[in-house]
Image (cartoon, rainbow, N blue to C red; front, side, top):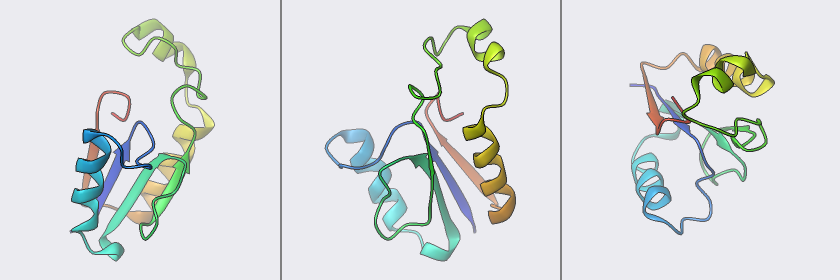
Length: 100
């Protein structure tokens, strides 16, 4: 099964529960069946499409629907969608509201 894992924040360094949990999950999957879409830095040993973090994408109020709708398709979103199209996953795991 091909899995695309979308993370809203970098997974490196592995210094928090979120990052440790995500890295543990990702390390148990075969590399050819996994795509990580997340902000830099890259996670060594994983296929990683690097995107800007939410802060650099200028989405200051994550729960404010009007701000999210105003942003429209950003370059980061277009890159993520293209990476997903190229990879053709069976399952997409969105880690948190920002990732979704």
